[in-house]
Image (cartoon, rainbow, N blue to C red; front, side, top):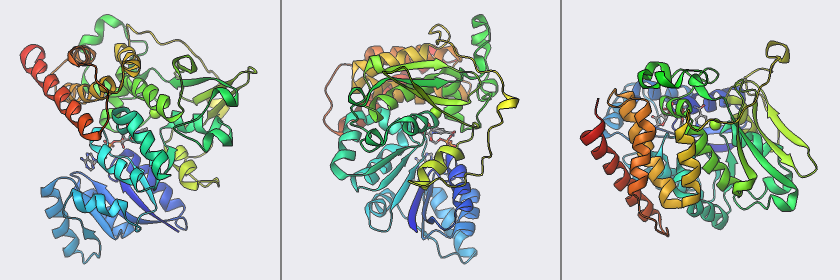
Amino acid sequence: MKNLAVLGATGSIGDSTLSVCRNNPELYTVKLLVASTSVDKMLSLCLEFNPSYVAMSCPNATAELAFKLKQENSASQVLNDEDELLQLLSSAEIDSVMAAIVGGAGLKTTLAAVKAGKEIFLANKESLVMSGQLFIDAVKLSGAKLWPVDSEHNAIYQALSPILQDCIGHCDLTAQGVSKILLTGSGGPFLNTPLDSFNTISPAQAVKHPNWSMGQKISIDSATMMNKGLEYIEARWLFNASREQLQVIIHPQSVIHSMVQYIDGSVIAQMGNADMRIPIAHVMGGAKRIESGAGNFDFFTSPEFSFMAPDYDRYPCLKLAIDACYQGQHATTTLNAANEIAVDAFLNGNILFTQISQLVDRVLQKTKTQSISSIEQLMEIDLIAKVSAREIIQRDLLC
Ligand code: NAD
Ligand code: MG
C-alpha cells in the first residue's frame, strides 16, 4: 500500500482519481486531501476515505471544515496553513502525489513534492508551463518519478520505449528513433462555428466541451485551444522535444489521445474513451494495468476518424503559446498568468471570448526577456503579468 495525497481532491481530476482508488482499494491509502473552498464535498470525501490529513487553501473553509469534521467525530486532522501542508508533502508520510490543483496555484505544492523525490502524478500542467527547466531540473536532482496524467502526454508516454519512459524530462528522442510527437486535440466546441460570430460566444457555450467533462478553466482553455498550447509547452518539457519534433493535429473525435512517429515510418497511437480515469489508472497502476472503471472503446460506434491542421485565425491562443514556448521561460510564465486572468474575466462576463487572446497577446508584448534562475523570480513575473492583465481589462476591455 502506498500513501497517496490528492491535491485538488474536489475537482474533476480529484473525482476521477478517487474513483480509481475506490476500484483499487488494495493499492493506495488516501492519506491527504487538499482543495480550496468546497467544504461540503470535502467533508463527504473525508467521511468516505478517512484521510489522516486534510487541507483547504481558503481560511474560512478551513475553519468550517474543522468544525464539521468535529461534529462528525472524524479523526481527519485539518492542517492550519500552507507551511504545514508543504512540510507534510515533503515528509515520509506521503509516497505518491496526484497534482491536480487548477492553475499556477498548484506550483508550490507540486514542486515541494518533486523536491522531496515523491512519485508525482502530474495533471497540473500550468506548474510545468510556469517553471519548465527549473521543474525538470528539480525532478532530476531529487529522483522524483514523474508520471504524465494529461491524456495526451500519458498517451505519448505509453507510445514511447521503456528507455524513454525512464528518463522523462531529459529524453533523447532522436537517439531512440522518434521523429515526431503528434499532439492531438479535438478543436473544442467551436471547430465549425463561423469566425464572425466568435464575439457573441457566451461562457455557458464555451464551457461545454463536445467530448470531455472537465473543470471550468480547462474547458475554456479547450475552447480557445490555449489548452493545446499549454500542452505543447508541457510536451516540450516532459519529452525534451525540439520544435521539429512537436506537431499539433486536430482530431475532432478525441479517440486517439496522441501519437509518436518513428523514423521508420511507424506511428504508435494510444486510443480509448475520453475518460480521465484511463490515464489516471495507468499512472496509479504503475507497472501493472488496473481497472479504471471507464469501460472499453467501441470502434463500431465511432467509425470515422478525421484529422486536420489547426487554423491559427480560429485559435490565436494556440499560436501565442507555441511562440512563447520558444521565446523563453519569462514568456510562458507570462502567457499562463495572463490567460488565468483572461479566462476568469471571461467567465465573469467582463470580457468577450475573442478578447482572451487579445489580452494575453498584449500582456506578452509588455514582458521583457530575462533569464530565469529561481522560483521567486517566476512568481514575480507571474504577479506582474496578472497586474498588467487586470489593468488592461479595467482600462480598455471591460464590457
Ligand atoms: P477543477 O476546477 O475541476 O478542480 C480544481 C481543484 O483544485 C479543486 O479541488 C479546487 O478546490 C482545487 N484548488 C483550486 N485552487 C486551489 C488552491 N489555491 N489550493 C488548493 N486547492 C485548490 O479542475 P480540473 O479540471 O480537475 O483540473 C485540475 C488540473 O488538471 C488543471 O491543471 C488541469 O489543466 C489539469 N487537467 C485536467 C483534466 C480534466 O479532464 N479535468 C485533464 C487534463 C489535465
Ligand atoms: Mg489534455
